[in-house]
Length: 190
Image 1 (cartoon, rainbow, N blue to C red):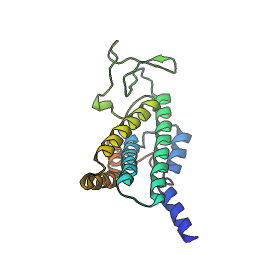
Image 2 (tube, rainbow, N blue to C red):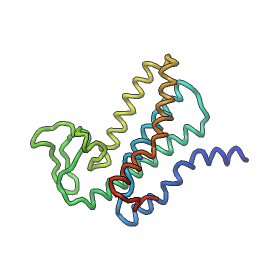
Image 3 (cartoon, one colour):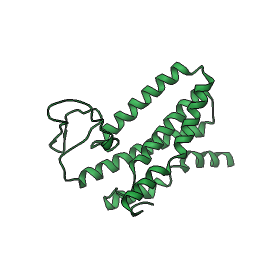
Image 4 (tube, rainbow, N blue to C red):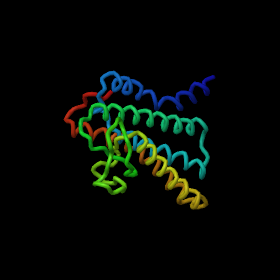
């Protein structure tokens, strides 16, 4: 019984702090106090942790924790994107692959008629559509999975992958700290 409770706490414990944050953003329709880079850090860390499992086995609740956290971060990104786009008055929209598309009857274009990727670092991870975040996460996952597949027999690579997963997650507070510094406030943060 205790092991089931512990496994449940491991799987869902990381998600709990984001529930009040989600509710606050949803109610106030303001996402300025939440850094979407926190989502980026957790997505990268948990994808790397899942890939690490192919090289070195670890407990199933930790795998489920990573899967649940990835889902949670995608939900948070979706909410933040919706809130940001509803509040933003400018017609300039950013996208991951630089595709022209219609979003709320606003035509999207990048640098005139050129169809190119919108990889300006100033706007990285500040895209206008949730689908752009999903495309980026899928691209990262596929590239990382392919590299892992190629180097899975290397113990050094597997251990480095595990280190990068843990190190990335350990840096979780950095994006939020920077967001708070830029805003000169912690308002909206829970």
